[in-house]
Image (tube, rainbow, N blue to C red; front, side):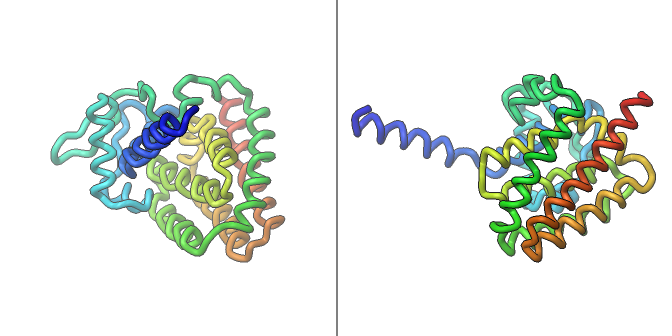
Length: 244
C-alpha cells in the first residue's frame, strides 16, 4: 500500500472511530442486553435517571442512546411513559456473537469452564492495572446495586456494568471482549435467578469481595473472588435449567 492510500485508510478509520459516540456505545450495551435475553420484548426500562446512574453517563446520553434504538424499531418511546422494548431484532447492534446466535450453541459446562479460565487471567491483569477512577466507579455501582434489590432488570444492567468495568481494566481488548461475551451467556436464565429472594444480596456480597481484592491489588484473592462468584452463577443457573 502506498503512503497516500495508507493515510487515506487511516483517516477513514479515525473518522469512523470519532463518529462512534458514547450514545452509540450505550445503545450497543442495551442491544446486547436485549440480544442475550436479559431484556425481553414487553419489558419497560428503568427511568433515565436510574439508567444514567447504573451506566455512569448523563441522562442526555441515555436519551440519545434510546433514540437510536427507537429509530431502529427496537424500543418504543412515549412521552410521559417508561421506554418499552418492542423488538428483539437488534440487527448489527450489540454483541455480534450473540446477535448471530453463536454463544448459545455452547453448553453451560463449556461456558463455565471457559469463563473461569478467561476471568482468572482478566483478574490477574486488572489487579495490576486498574486505576483509582475505575475503583471509584465500581464502588458507585455497588451502591447502585443496593438500590435495585427486588428489581432484576435494573440489577442486571448495573451488574453488567460492574463486570465490564473490570474486564476493561485488564487492559487487553481481546480478553475484555471475550469475557463480556461469556458473561452474556444465558442472561435470560440469570434474570430469573436474581428474581429469587436473597439472590441479588448474595451477588452484591460477592462484588464487595471482588472490589476489596481490587483495592489492595491482590491478584490471587481477586481470582478466587471471581471464581466463587462464577461458581455461584453456574450452580444457580444449572438448578434453574434442571427444573425448567
